[in-house]
Amino acid sequence: MESLLQETLSLKTFAFFLLIGVTTLAIVLGFVTYAIYFERKVIGWMQFRIGPNRVGPLGLLQSVADVTKLLMKEDTIPNEADRTLFKLAPVIVYVPAFSVLATFPFTETLYLADLNIGLLYYIAISGISTLGIVVGGWASNNKYSLLGGMRSAAQMISYEVPLVTSVVGVILLTGSLNLHDIVTNQGDNIWEWNLFPQIIGFIVFTIAAISELNRTPFDLPEAESELVAGYHVEYSGFRFAFFMLAEYVYVFAIASLATILFLGGWYPPLAMLDFIPGIVWFLLKFTAIVFFLFWIRATLPRIRVDQLMGLGWRVLLPLALFNIFLTAIVEFVLR
Image (cartoon, rainbow, N blue to C red; front, side, top):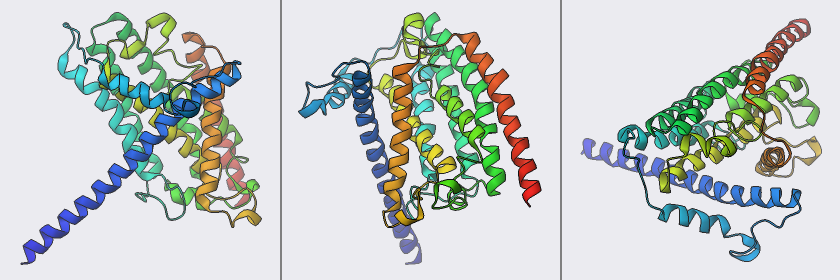
């Protein structure tokens, strides 16, 4: 009887977590679908074009149609490719992108997991996607794909260093790696957010994050004008969809992380506005960051490889280290 009860509880627990996972996946897929639509519309307006406007009212079903067409395409694998690694690479890229979402607190009570090392978890897990990109580039047995994979390895490893270093100042101010604690250590007034004492860290974090996302002006691993499509040039159908999905899931993750670390999470900019639900403030800040990423894509041209590496090692890393020393000195003096 006791074993039957334990088995029933285990099944209920499994069903509960499965439901949470499916719900999270549905929310993320909804975000990705309309983030693509929103990006195309925003860039269109900035370039004096209309953007998608044919499929559905105001073109709202354009992304749905594009994804449907993509999933219906033939799944091809080059004859000379390493078939096992070729199939595995999109999974290695996507699974970490989805896994990091578990630690984000969207409000004081709305979160999936409250890890004491939530920030470290994000940094560690997100780095695995780099391996998937390199594996996909190598397994395709295509020179353009291999060049894209090698560029990605150099770029993502180089920019992970300033990205991680830029958040150390926030950790020093908070004294914790827990993302929930980082938000609560800020406050419900804009001048209490980490944005101002950590403005150097925020700038470094933003630039490094754009590079980690492989987005313009740092989209050298894909570089359509040079490498056709880079590391995923040989991918089609649902495997290509996994790469695209992972990219936009990381946009979701980076925007959420920036909101949590620097913009006060669910707190309002003024204490008098705390009657508005925290999720509303979180979504407003989150949307502003996503819009900024799209704005950058519409504005800046792609930079050269030497400029990319020089910016990371000669500018961003020294700035991030300076921010750590400055934060440590200020904290020591004030305490």
